[in-house]
Length: 403
Image (cartoon, rainbow, N blue to C red; front, side):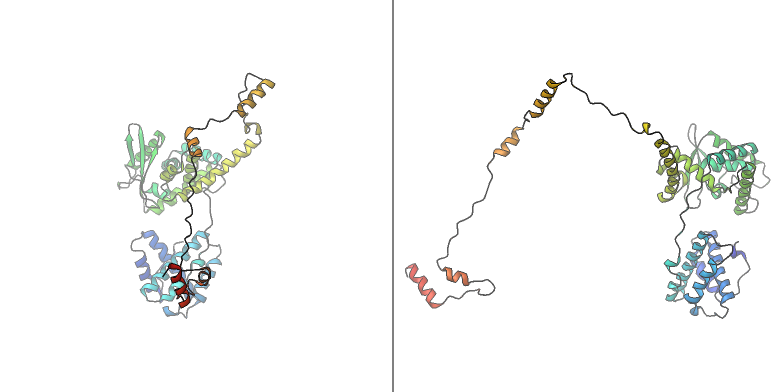
């Protein structure tokens, strides 16, 4: 339910929040703008119902207004999804930070804190099982209509459903004779990429062009015609996949993004390295692609456990060392003689070992005639230095020198 499509909200803070969202969403997409306005509307509706006496923006406090809104989100029935709950907190925090700067209210920067955002649950990709994948593809091939060809294209290229909705009519490109690739437009992560395809995928694109030529809508350069909007086309494809899964006997809920997960897992199981899979999927971070590697580790564990059930295949036969033709005591004596044979030392090692070791000699200590043992013991640097001799010491030293 998109809260931003409702009638304008009559709240004292509505205009201030709208200006803040205009500043935040100026470089962002219209879809992001709608999510920001829906989050702000949800918060203002809570204030209007639970705190109608709050009329001044400066009176907005963390407790009870913001903390009460968090409690209200957690107590919803049915409960919000964890990602939706986290997203609303993050977006409202961005609005508060913008208001703290634009309205000169520095305390608004602390209305929502980083510790208020819970850790997102780590969800592994959900690829189709081999049985589900085979049953759904067989059903799609039997139908061979517009929706079936679109879903097969998703399965064999790993595109997102929003990317296939934006495909150009001339999306198929030839790199070399017999080599084809699909130009995937800017998608979720604003990345454009080329996905190599085979002849079967080229046939899917040609059939979709054939369906587009008979569509009554005027040509707009896209491979798939849109009756009203992109969201309507995406919802229709989701519904078509649900009907195909039911007809194929798959009881689990299947969404189009699982076709992308199945494609990525198939590439990893086939031996495609991680950077190549990252390019095929249009990921900007290797951490996103590593999630698909976790799925394949379950396959590795299954293969490992199957190998443990047959341990003779794990232990290779040791290689026997080459034995000498001489055996018995004669061979043992020969081995002992070889081991006792002296090693040949290089000549430069001998020269270095026989060279005399240089040891510097100590210089002889020359005693100062002006000093004796008694005066030497009394001289201490820092306490009795410089030393001033007495008259008797000067006279004794002069007589020793012959003066």
